[in-house]
Image (cartoon, rainbow, N blue to C red):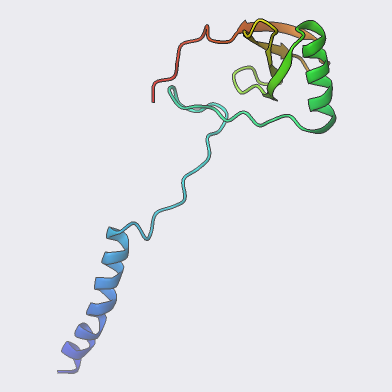
Length: 117
């Protein structure tokens, strides 16, 4: 009889554990995107800050006058900075700079394939 009592005493615990697993109680938090993410996943591009932000934006605006829309580390071209500038005509250009703040490439915004969500 004691054996049956012990088994029955463990039943509520087992039911609770199965319930937690069933409702997602044991799931791990979602990981943030990382460099080298799988195809179709958006790579995270951290924003520039401090002196790096100031110098990168100044260099981009010197080459392409306008208004800075965003500036970030470029995930597609590691080691590069990307500054998006809206020009007077309303068009936007992505200006790529190396670590010495030299413009090494540009891309007109809106010319890449649109992401499908």
